[in-house]
Image (cartoon, rainbow, N blue to C red; front, top):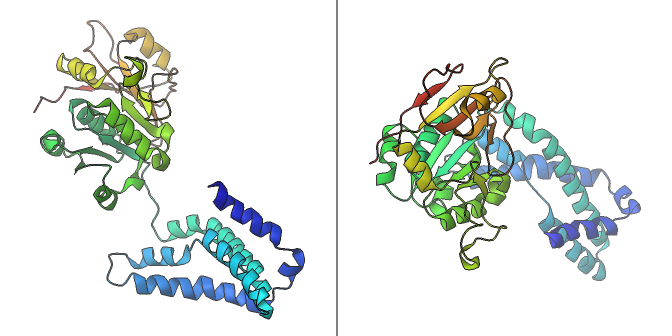
Length: 341
């Protein structure tokens, strides 16, 4: 990354104001032909026979990233052509600079409005990709579905996906880290990842792999055990994702609590029923999983830091049944844990 960034710095430092002022209408026309003719025609020919729609072809034909390759090649050949005595050789570097500058500015400011005009923007808020098909994963996915957010459960075991399929939860059967998953799963729909398998090392691997794409702060894993066991059993703090749920219970502990009668609970906060009152009435027993903000933004609870919730937010937690005499919270609902397969 440092070397690629350095190429642009070197190009900018080598281009003088006189060279830029020497560019005329022919150079501007060359850039215009490149933008409005060469690139769209290239996309039209190379996408023949594909499933791309006309609108998708138009967007791809307009958004044409040009950067380090053009810059590096122009810097190399500009010197070579000038050495050979070709008069316009010195114009190659400032022309490449003009192309990069034009495309970055035009495409950067137009991709949003153009994609919205073509109807190619994502209309729903980012959802959650859950890796692992256990009882906890199914209950979590059902609650996310109730919020009308995209959700998918991925697992390599077909039997563990059976109950999720029966509940009409989108599933992916296979290795989520495989190349096949890249061709069959639309990862752009997901802004969060929850690794909920019974293998702590695999959870860390999944979070590490998806961290650059989804964002490491949006990758969570169940029951991370870095602080337990001998040094050789610990996972480096630079790997894996954030620990989901305060107290860091393991997946086995969560599954056991669901088997003992705990349920997934959804509580909507109001001006009268605040988060403070929620905690006063229920204590620390319910394990808050995440808070759904108005508009669909999710804030997951982690092992570090108290979660914040405001009136209008919806709290999703797992906890035991209500104690006798407690008044129900507004819009509070519970679902029984699904039976084991």
